[in-house]
Image 1 (cartoon, rainbow, N blue to C red):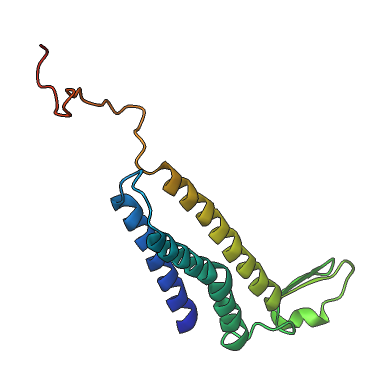
Image 2 (cartoon, rainbow, N blue to C red):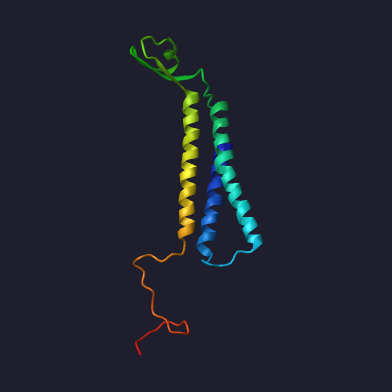
Length: 153
């Protein structure tokens, strides 16, 4: 549990650093090769955490500490009714469906991937739109020297 939670916290902090740097960096500022290398390595690290380490730590936690194995049943459904827990092994009737904890573990891992992919697309959108003027923003008049015009000539 500690490894899963700590990997999630590290990933969230790394994304927060990306947003902080993006908010402070002026649009159109040239990127040096050193900044590009650091940023590329940073984004690779975030993606490695999101798509590799966090789901792996979840699967380890579910397998080792929660003991969500294929032989541990959650629910059994058939024409004979609905039975919760391991008593579902003895469930009779037609159309029997058994749902075990390993399936729930895999569904949660898939949801993690889907959430991270959606978050990645959202962060791409936020990064690309940073610094743009909003439709209601009115830019104040400036003189040809770049100073704000206080009154009409």
